[in-house]
Image 1: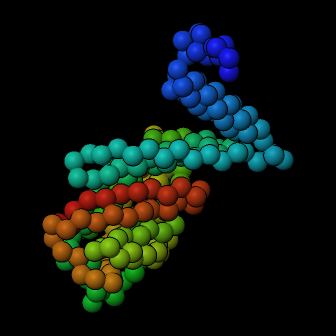
Image 2: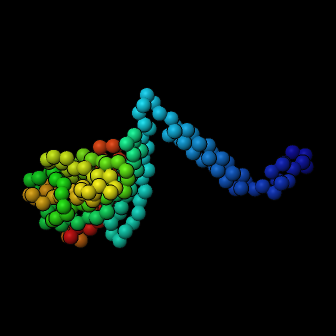
Image 3: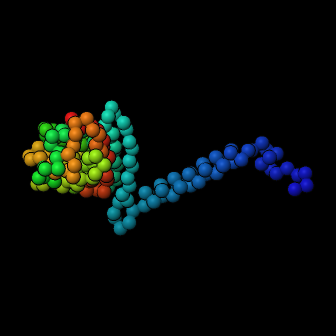
Length: 193
């Protein structure tokens, strides 16, 4: 260049400011596209979206999952974890769970949304190894907010010792996921009792 200043330099716009402006424009455009996709429906089916937020409460990670369906929104959260190390052993025989009132080793789910959700499976990571558990009987529904029953709902591990690849140890951390019928995956974490 022969002594001429660019417009950005003469207006006092620095490279970092220009980069921030570009990022804001791109994010705004992406948000607009997502909103357009969410507002459209295809042959009477509603668009399904997922929002996952992580909140740390003492030693338990709570994750909320929001799903938009024709019947309303299911917003399910893992609100309590109480897993006893003695219930999760390599010598255990059960790879399932049931649902009911909190008792023994359990996870509690709460739904603050207007649609119900059903638990289909869960995983529990013990000493770095993932263990899958399935519902052993009936259904495990987390009812919509205001329902007289099944909200909150607890996943129970009380009938027999749960089988895990390695023995759980009191005081050691665990993580896991709960999968719902609408595709939502809830994360949880805590410490074995």
